Length: 307
Image 1 (spheres, rainbow, N blue to C red):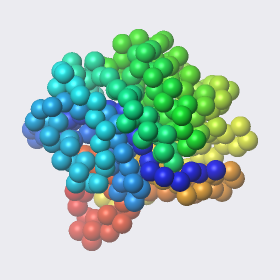
Image 2: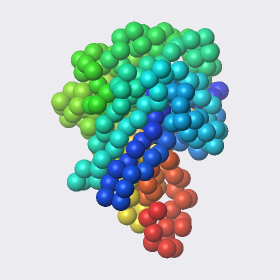
Image 3: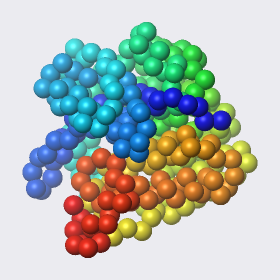
Image 4: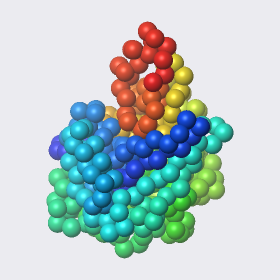
C-alpha cells in the first residue's frame, strides 16, 4: 500500500544549454531534478538528492529548487556543476553532449541521505550512474532501510554511459525490487538493443511489480504480471513546442498517482496513464522541461499560441 511521508528523488541536476537556429538558452534541468520539481508542482513535499557544484551554475540550481519548494540534499562536485549541451535533430528531439562533471557524476549516501530515504513514502531514482558499482551498492543499501515505495527510471544517456553491461546489471538489480519501473523505446534500444515490449517482459520476469513503457507519439502502457494497459497521447490545443520534459512529466504524474492509490485493476492503471498523458501533453506545449498542468492549456485555446 502507498506510504505516508515526503517524496525523495535521487539522480542528476544540471544546466541544460539549448542550441538551435534561434540562439543559445540555458535552463536548470536534469531528469531527476525535473521529476522533483514536477512532483512539487503536483503538491507533494519533495526532496532531491543530487550532485551540485559550488559555482554560479550551482547557485542557479539551488535558487530554482527554492522557487519551487524542493529541498536539496547536495553532494559536492569538485568538478563543478554538470552541464548538458542540447542540439535538436531533424525530428525536434534533443541530442546531448555532457561536460566532465556530468560524465563523472557521483552521489554520496551519508547519514542525512539515508535518513531522508528511510522516511520517504516513495523514493524515485532517475538518471543514476548504475554503471558505477560502488555507488549502486551504496544506493541499494540505503533503499534497504526504507519501507516506502520505489520507482526507477534508468534514463541512460549515451554521453554519460561508461559501461553498458555494467549499467544493465546495476539497473536490473534494483529494478527487481521496484514497485514501478519506467522505460522508453530509446532506453530499450540503447541498453538492450531490443523492442520495448521485450524489455517490459524482461523486467517483470526479473521481479519488477509494474513496468511503465513510453513510446513518444505512440503513447504509453503499463504491464504487470496480471494485466497490460495502453493509452494514446492526449489531445491538446496548439502545436508541440518541446518534448524535452515529456518523459519526466509522465514519471512525476505516475508517482503522484501511486501515492493516492496503488493501482491493482485495469481501470485504475488506465486512469493513471490518462492523467500522465494529459500532463505530458501540457508540458510539451511549452519550451523547457518544467512540468505543466493541463489547466495551463486554457490560455492556449484562446490565443492559439504555443508558448
